[in-house]
Length: 466
Ligand code: BGC
Image 1 (cartoon, rainbow, N blue to C red):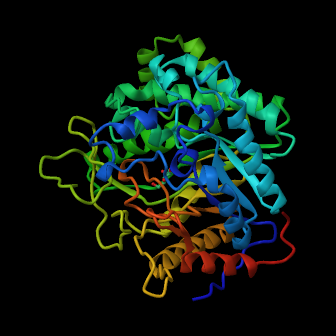
Image 2: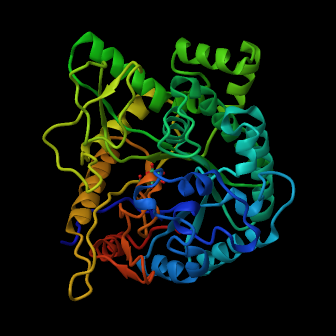
């Protein structure tokens, strides 16, 4: 099924990964321990006890993976730096061999004509920083600023596009509010300082990267429409609060210099013990203007008021604990990915519209992640027929194209992911890749969706700039 979709000249197609999900080699070349190494090693944290220690071994096979990207024809490749590879304890002594790895990767990408788009942080905090308070402590934001300077000074001669942090909302909610992800703190709403200090880290990093000569700087935030479970006031309020806590707590400070509600700002003041003047000063840093805004979109969320008879089991990725002021409710009548996530391409258009309406100063957007987990593997002939992924990508790209025609300023789209990888608490059981990985042999096999995406990219205007 070739796609007839045409995007404007200059539109950038790419794919995304993150360090901890693909690199493996967790002991190699002086890499320090991260919170995810420790978390994944605890029994019961990761499905089937899957270990990321070897993973898909991108650290040693990066050249093969860059060749797959080159044959795909993408303009951009988004990956992340592993903080503990470069600064094993998060600050202080630099591990030269860690920088060397990213030098090799970036140089291979540039040689292949692919624009590297690194993210500075995708959830793999050095353990030493966690032991000193992690994202619940202001010092971590300061350590991140120094890490950003180091990276900027080392790479800005070759890297033009930078993303600071990935999905601060998910890291806050799943890793700090709940215990599904590292560091597994389970603090519920008391996790709000982790949001603030990641946001501060973002703002400080923007300043530091810019001072080091970085040309285009952005962030990768997860955004999704929040659908109220019904028109009842209680459900409308619950959905509003949830949207504030997930979407707008991370969008508003960056794009408007404020928190979305007095309750959230008040909670941050109370939980951090900082003064209102300090909060205002932080928000000025956090709202440093950006050149691009990264949006990760997967699915909408349906939210209602908590009710005893509301059954959300088996459908949602995470059950929201009792006691919080909202409950997740299944979206009915939609197809689902193998992860159980609802497939709602129109949600991409909806959230882009909401962002446009909410933020008059919205920078150009890149869809920094979109994709789906489908478990298809090689058939008897070795071919991976992942038609459902092709349908998913096609439908989302159509929704994107329609929304761009309606005025959304979107300049790029990255598939999550180029390759099957370590899907956090789900281990290797969920496969998001355009390329299949045999977990025993680590052999890479491009799926049908890889060839579909290659053909889509090749069919675009040759006037596209790289
Ligand atoms: C994250 C990725 C993750 C993907 C699929 C995003 O939330 O940034 O690390 O693999 O979604 O779950």
